[in-house]
Length: 188
Image 1: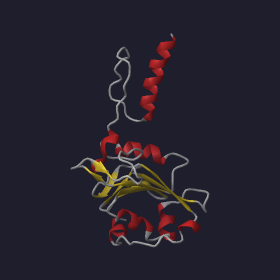
Image 2: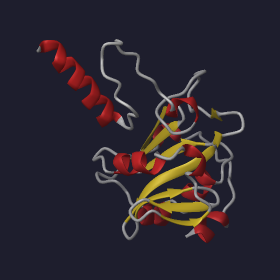
Image 3: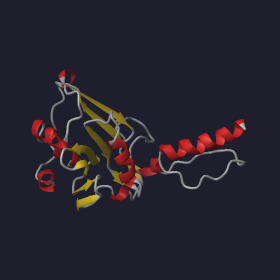
Image 4: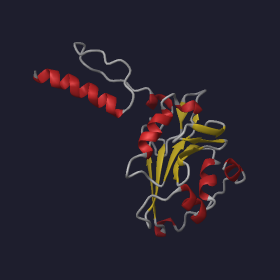
């Protein structure tokens, strides 16, 4: 619940024993992936809360985090922000919408991502400052890719002028279909 998240404060913990942990944390632009490697299956929100009660509140209450995506036994995909939860399976919002500033297609992209077999136990997306159009990358780069927010959500495709205008392309599948269609025309 939102009360559970808001009742916890961010706590800075020591990382001295990180080498002994049974966890993998990967950063890709402003998206972070957290895998608990001692379990073969993806842990649910309920299991994470039971095993690591401070982890999810600690993440979402950190100023550099915009939201986390976890999967719940009872609620399915949950996008949890500091002041609200977006339930992906039924598009219900409790509190403030944590996806509000991340674009009109954010929920669609996260629903797709949450369906992948290799989805991490916790997917973390950095904050997005809409005033300055900036995200916080989890790696030492000037630009960003992989997560939601900022210029990375406004990609472009440079293609030959004789190709048909595809209109708005949303998601990897639509880009693939467009490119495949135009490349097949080259063979005919």
